[in-house]
Length: 564
Ligand code: ADP
Ligand code: MG
Image (cartoon, rainbow, N blue to C red; front, top):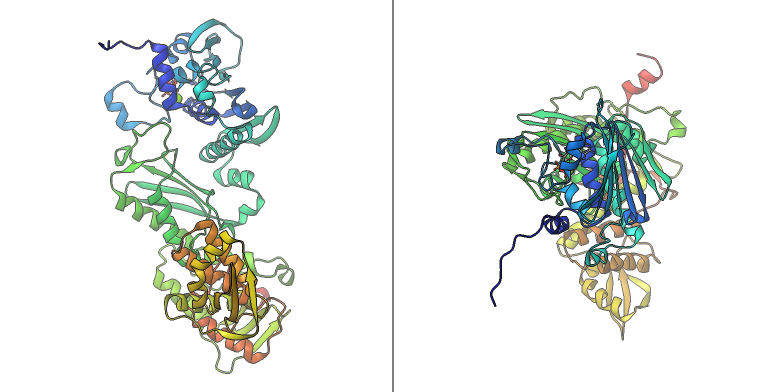
């Protein structure tokens, strides 16, 4: 049989292309929002029904289209955004391929109304790629696009759409990204006629707070950094915004949302010991760089990007974040000091005022050393509310949270024993036997050697059972089962015996074993706790990233009592 090579008709080409550009309601909305933003809109409204499957309506007040352009825009590769090859190197708009409108309208019932100022507005209707109506229409300046019955003519694709709620979730995620990358644009979202979001035009910080809540206001640290050809602005979150799961990390390159492993990793690394593995800080970075330093010609559906010089961008990001984070020290007291005792005042640390822009790591270290590490010779300690320990230092006083301090000490000890020979178990008077379901028991067998290392004396004991004959010396009797099942759950969920599992084990054990708020300590116990705390690698933050120490200097107190 001889195969004839035929030129496909345009509509079929568009339908095939639609598979590339749009595959669900949220990707339609992405294209429409990008067009509205490229059209310099100040206000954009999105209305969806049934997760966007029934209908999507995007209304903007942008530049609008002239009648001729309106028709043209639905032809494949028609774009007003680039004209010649050279333009590709200097793209300033989100769209440039001219593929979205023809694709979308070939797989739905699309009605578009558009008006440029000083020209008559028009309405164009396209069903499955075929123009069915074009007539003058009285609308305000701007464009509205209604996309109904997505994939009604392509059952195979329709089948792949998820239920309304999953499609709605994807839309919400996408919508938030656009709100965050364009705070100056006012956005509204309506789901099945109910208003979900309504954000006025604002600055970035206000937009973040509008989206995530008032709590964010005092926890956002500004990033504003310029180096060579890179301008990096935005916000990083302080430690109170650290989460156990991803989802609050945003990078935009020249206004385009991107997901880039290199950028994420660089930022996490910059937080360094402030974070544990498996903890994720909030950040939103707007990176502006020369287009010729990136490969922008990526797939429309993808959010990847290629940098021509990865080292350079890494360096720039690291610098910008570390400079901003040095100042997080300032934020610690406001999230930590028991407010009722201090009349809602945010305490200034003695070293706040010393922080200048050209701060170096050495300087920061020295400030810490000067202000906290020099305990007086004959130490005085006070435990207050069975919760915090106060002690004098040469420059003033420090407050220590006894639980997190102990947690830090136990954590480092547990880590060391997991990496080395292990802790010795302390025999328990009445051995405990625990039964498991067969599947969990199998997983438990994998981690028994690790549990042994942090000081559990455990062995198999009959079918699907273990016996605990010894436990870590610092763990209270009765806590064994709780610690083991938490560690087991984590292992079952991730099924990896990697370093983050080891960290998790150490953190779980130390959290459970540490003294609690409410535990009475005598002076010698307080002193021993402080001693051991300062012998750890990171006395300032607990394994979960919360601060351990708050510092109050004499000059601070003098200021407060108006002696200065
Ligand atoms: P691209 O965005 O890649 O240029 P599209 O198919 O998304 O391709 O859009 C085609 C053209 O239609 C755009 O170049 C633009 O001129 C016009 N257009 C689309 N949406 C709008 C809008 N909301 N406001 C003004 N013009 C628009
Ligand atoms: Mg477009």
